[in-house]
Length: 335
Image 1: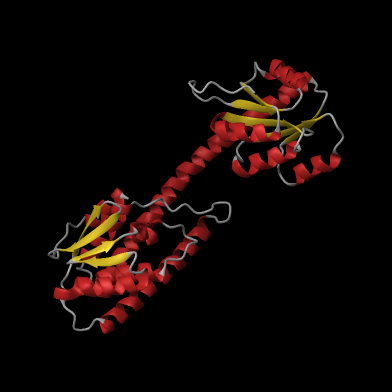
Image 2: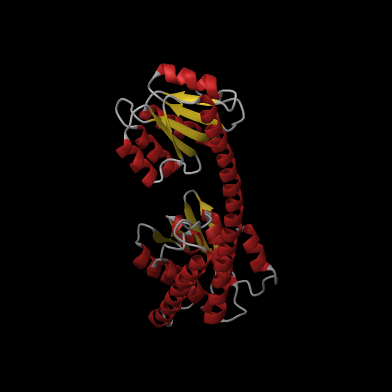
């Protein structure tokens, strides 16, 4: 097995997998001047090399008939995990059935029959390397575009939290929004990346609108229920009431009261709406969390969130009456 030097910067390389040592040496001599060549002698070894060096591999050339598994299994593996790598099948045998299957399943870019014509082989590999380079440039542009779209998605979700607060308890009330976003920041928010093979931008907007609308409706319904359920309970026992409500939905193992503090043990749930992909519905428990913060603000209460080990701990604080006009923009930039 020949592997690239781990101390060198990755460069576009060709992975050639064949169990015949003579074919490996012949391929290296013929193609080595065109690009670095990494070699393996079996399907399993080829899979291991793909996993170890995928970032530096541009083209995969696999023999079809090898001990254990056929080469098209390696090509299928590469297509599923590293679709940007250009895949080529080569064989000395007339195995039309397997070759046609590989073509139909999109596993290969080219089929090259042995014995090779060196001039043609070099031309095929040169074109494959060029195609890999174009794919890399395309993928980089796509990643940059997706990064912008993902940031826009999070910004829109933050905006909805503000909209819900303003519409349900008043446009001047920002404290629940600040507490909610501070909580999410403490646990971390992953960019919600959708499956772009299954949806385009219009699909994303439609799905995001439906998800956010469903979440907003659930928050409004839960806030109305809390107003009835907790009527008469004021700021003095608001934390206790909120702890009881959350424990009933999240489970006592996840949310509990500790003196005058509220302890959220599994903090990842605090970022559910902001950080989950668009195809994952927001839970009723998360809607209860935001509704609880809105209800708490109506009682005149507020919470300050701090991280203590793996838990997020909330302690009573004086509610802030005024926030800077750009406070929401600051949060958006932070996420």
